[in-house]
Image (cartoon, rainbow over all chains, first blue to last red; front, side, top):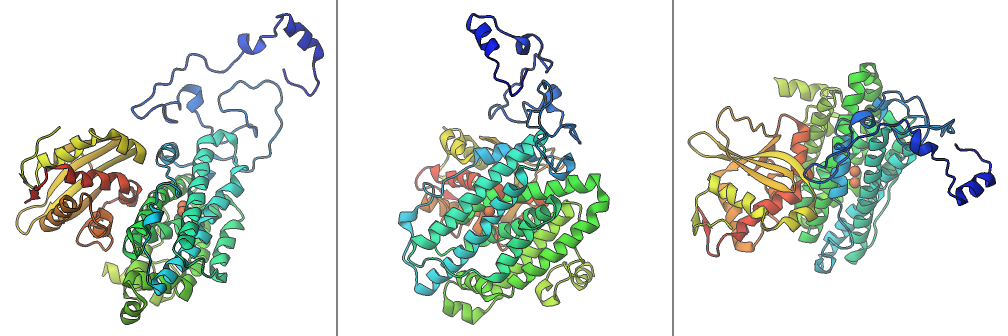
Length: 366
Length: 154
Ligand SMILES: [Fe+2]
Ligand SMILES: [Fe+2]
């Protein structure tokens, strides 16, 4: 029984032990459920049993009542706008949540900041510009899920919980790169309009579909490839560890994005053309970044090991990275059920060596 | 504790068994890294003869050696990390010399450019798992250094 009235009569009755006990005698949720822990402990998958494990495709209610509980009376409508499971779900979301909780790390404790070596001035500058860029874009991946989280129906609890872990992961990524910029003497570098333009595109996405495709699949896929390459770019073992730890987290986010899109498209294949449009717009901006000095040059200097070496080899190392980044992204698009090979509408010089554009695809299949 | 000879044959079932058995000696390290769920095959290519593959299953905090994968094995790896026998030996000896892989001999460093190691999978998410669990996998391989001092991998 729940109303806005303060029930003083009830208080008097309860004081003398005359309890209501309706919740005890008349609760209609499932009784006798005994979830058994698996070898790592009691996981979300372990408790996804009986009526509690049934996740409706289209929940009837818009409340925060825990899925599977007995609902007493009329609960207020919270106003969720994402009420179809396939808008946010992924088959791996429970496992990814558990893994995220299990594999947290600390940018304060787990990085050997005191072992950061003094770098050559140009190299420090390059590392700081790179860290500035990463600190800037990482927070997007907190802001975007945070923006949509409260609109997602509470029955999709596990997806919401996973997005909470992503928010924490990205806060840490933003933190670790800000700390790196400030720990080596260089400080922060430049923020540039084209990067902000991409961030705005994701934040202003008109629906979760658009934002998730742009962020989880496109942007985070690229960032994952960059973190992988961090082992080559990092000027010291300290940054190598930063990149490796971030890489582990990033791969979870990409695993969610890829499998979410797959889940979505398997159930609503007609949406594919919308998703291609979203990605066309995002790729266009990313392509501009591939020709922006503040993005390209720090990576080139870090990869070469010095400004002088970078001037000698030009963009040779960055070109290898760009090709890999695009190919890995295309493979994930395939896995998500949204093949983009041959469909990317970017200049051939950006797509050279990849199967992204029509010409590249023809070349590779020849 | 497994006993290892001064010269370990690589590749061999014993070599991979040692690494996986050793993970049980330091459970707190694997627990701190967090759990994993990954079937990885390590492939060793040779100038002559077929490549050999060994299976490792990361199951929660446990790491289980599946021995050598014969044709028709049901292990079904989610990703394969492949390289020449010389590359693997160099990596192992680097770990033995330094206590852990130096920064140019980590699995990730050796595989970034697809050479001398290459990570492949028919499923890009299987390949991504190699990066999702990078620290756990590297910790496992770094246990090569726990073999007796003076050991050489040959
Ligand atoms: Fe991130
Ligand atoms: Fe991320």
